[in-house]
Figure 1 (cartoon, rainbow, N blue to C red):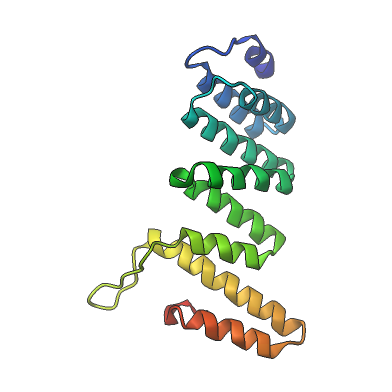
Figure 2: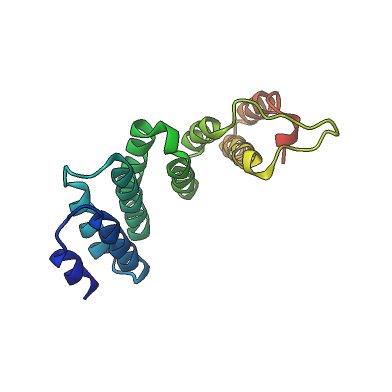
Length: 176
């Protein structure tokens, strides 16, 4: 029913939001194929403003994640990071979720490092940075520990120690 309404709506000024919302509703109802179709069709239209195109790509990536098509979601998210560097924090968070699910710690480390603020500043009392800036740092620490654990389980304790030493040198608070 919802999908038929979306097909009947002509894409006019302002109707892109309606199409996006319909796609989101379809995804929430478990009708991921319909959501992918709506968001994909919307993305194929050349008349989208940059902000709308960003939102559609993000929703399409979420559709793919819901469908378990992580490679397609990753492709959309990486394109968002390349094309919209100022707005890509949410895209990077979704990339981290994908890399965590795939246990791809090296790629997760790359993305988490890109999310770090330029400088994590501790206050005068030695208190940690705000939770917002601390999130990527904690995730980065976790990924480094996972990478070291993988090296240890593969029978390479020297590599595991090297990973931990290198990362510990960045911030002593990172060790779990």
